[in-house]
Image (cartoon, rainbow, N blue to C red):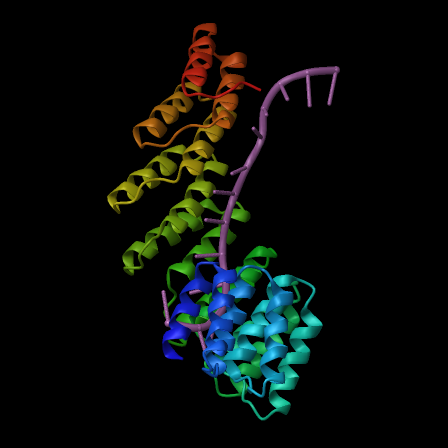
Length: 316
RNA sequence: CAUCACUACAUCGA
């Protein structure tokens, strides 16, 4: 069964669920009794594809076949219900059910529950679960804190987000890349570019590795604030880290420059895009055409139009 | 390799 489990796990991860299901059924055909691990892997696979109904079906199936779900199974199902939206009652029901069956919620259970509330922006409830978690002698971990920092940041409660960020550091829980990303985004939403830029520097100081995710967040933030010098520096940082900028963000940079009427810079951005091997799409050309039409020269417009055709696009 | 958290995007036209 371990071999089956490995395969089901991999197929589920890659979203190849029809195949995963076939293997699962094949295992039974070969008279191998699936354990709780295999059922859970399959449930997880369905959940990842947003097929919550299917996930719940398997959950019911396993019980009807006499296999008892364990805490990981419940966590997986709770997570599935959270993603589907509006599944909050079901989540609470499952949380009570697992306890009535003598299972103990673990830290992941609490995280999932907190997440279920934050997704619906019911932060008071989330905070209550956090208290319950602590009372149950679980230390909130980096996932817990990141979820909450993000939730408070998203709803404009920056003070709360910062407070939690400080609390986590005090409690010896080191923020990781995800945590920084969440707080960076929150600063961006509030237009606090100074704070964001300080935090971005702090990340580097504490040796926290930035990912493309981070760079995208910071790029977005600077571009929104029209802090182009900073934005360009981020592009350099990306390359220093051996990554190549996401074409969507280069496009966004072009858009930002255009909005600020920096035609020359926009056109430079276009060149950067091609030199990075990204293909500008029709979208990008349309933006540039618009700005050059309004603020640039006719020569630039026709040049762009020709480029667009050469790139194989059909004007709309 | 059974389960949890973080990111972005328009333009023209009346």
